[in-house]
Picture 1 (tube, rainbow, N blue to C red):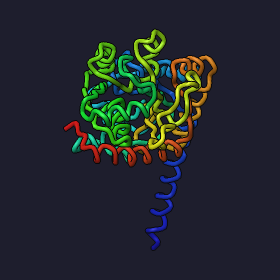
Picture 2: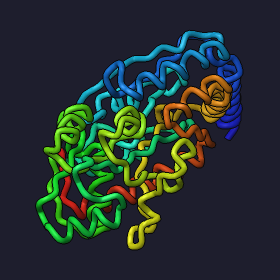
Picture 3: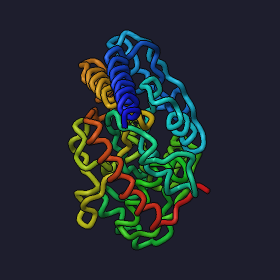
Length: 326
């Protein structure tokens, strides 16, 4: 017993020093450049948006905030890189909706979607819009579903590829509407839009931003947005969920920031505050909203709840429709 007490005292002293050092490190954070990994190619929507946010963060935090693109394997390469990075607040992930699809799309992942990350903040979301070729004689969602039921298997829809947000928005719609239509996957949104304009496919779910010019010149017809609420920039465009029988439909592309699991809570709190400040700056917020982006940063706890709900919701859709990328 006489030997144990000194050892116990030494252990407690060491523990106190560890906690003290951790708190001190968080107080001084950041002291070096911060990397935000974007799991897509440079020049895409996620990349462009993240670079705009990074510029604001760099100005506010007085360190360089750099973007590192790590695309591939359904965005899992970038996610895996961050999941296995040091949990020190210097490597972050700008993820989006595919993050909650991938656990069900692949037989296995090299990281745990729920436990491999610390939520930092929700960033916001971009709605998609159900558009048809003008030669399709429908002007409402109800008319489209009635046409599909009258001609089962004859209507085609385009997506940006199997397992993408545009694909799953359509899968959710067709399953809720109980219609039989053909899926034509493309390698990206643009080739699908070309065939939509050419009449080789009848409808599609692009983002509002990507289809804006075609809507204005009338080369496509918009029927409804996929978001839960109408979009301020297009208030006359109804939501899909306003159609009887499709209540509760909602499918937007959302973005969020994650850190490696084990990142200290005070560093997470600091990052959350800085992202709120950046996203709340009038010029950046106005620019993003002008592109159809709904800016909505929140708490880490709210993001954790969002991810859990989205994992459960989309997991059910993917399993019931036997969608896989294996």
